[in-house]
Image 1 (cartoon, rainbow, N blue to C red):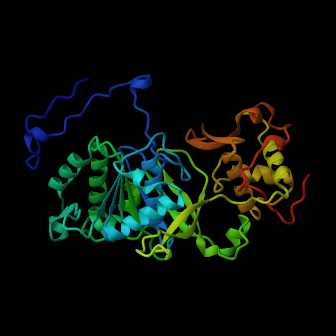
Image 2 (image 1 turned 120 degrees about the vertical axis):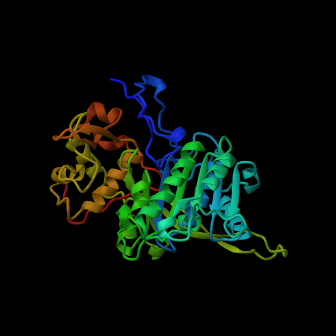
Image 3 (image 1 turned 45 degrees about the vertical axis):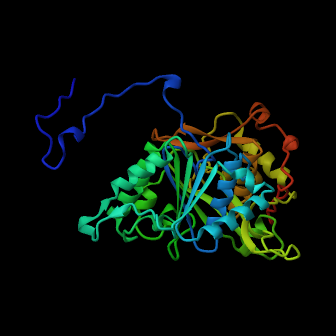
Length: 420
């Protein structure tokens, strides 16, 4: 069946621009382009992604640290396949302050910040050429600034791999609570990502009292998170949380959890953690003085306590029992893998949920298990877990002697839990 063009387009649409239904291409194999995750799921080419965080959680420092890592090809929680061309657009800070923070981030990662030349690009919204993707003075006449969209695409196409927009609110004049207007602005950035062949990452404030476990925690209109293909939330950790992860220095406020709360194009992923810190950048004319002290973030791997770790991992492998399982990664599901582990241990999965989650995340990082997609009872696909490698061939009988936690991964304590 063919679809013919109507004799005339709607009166408010110009003839040449009328949308014509396109036939499905039915591409096969490698002809169907793979998704390009440039630096983990938070940076995907052709897509808009989002970071939501309250003030003081290190969201700008994190994005600058990631930009430095991407431009240099270094690892910072994630690692790019190759050095990338990254553009930071900061709408709040003057260029001098951005330069200080970039140098501090490079120093914290033990990188030469001069090596970033040619791959890291920086603009400040305090300059005369501020990005404003909206035009029109009121809601009734609100439009996308199309000439600016075209200009940005021309500036980045083939020259930039990643754009970090910090904060998103600085690139438009729309009320944050205007769902329709915010959707227009995010979709404008999505077109820039698509036509410019780059990843666009937006940074936005969390609402007061918003949940750190929800993509709806963003301040203002819900259409922002709805349009983003990946959303991550940053949240400051409490004393109980940090103690559970092996932190005993009393500085819980310096530790921040990074959790993916919306993942349209990737499977569920384990939480990551950063530590707020600072470095002296040595910019004082007097070399005897340290210069400005600038905030940075450092990757933090939980120190899982060794006591009980082997027992819990053994229980996890016993619970798996084979290559294909119906146990899911999400702790919100009644089929959560953690409940099966707790059953093997004779423990209460709800009481010890956080401890078991830490072990599951450790097993993911050390490639004892992996997440895979499996149809559920209703036919919808779910993120399930299964053993990997030698653990797959011996699940249910293999002791975890081969499990090698990193130097940061040590113990999990489950007080009151007894081994079978």
